[in-house]
Length: 105
Image (cartoon, rainbow, N blue to C red; front, side):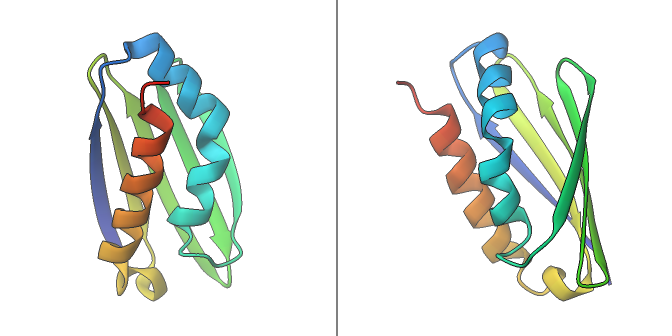
């Protein structure tokens, strides 16, 4: 059964810089969202602060959205049954990679 996972990442970069980092770094999150399996991602920036994505592979589909806010980023992904069993592990990996993207440099 599919399982939604929500990850909230706090930041103090400002909305514009957080948006830039997620635009540039979404590829790094893709590997974490797919649990290391080979999924093909397609993404669309619906607004300047909302990215929606679909990933397909191994007969499974991941759907989700990333919303950029002035002080946090919210990632919601719906994991298919195969990945739902390891949802906590995937969420932890995505959270770690997301925090790396948002670290002050």
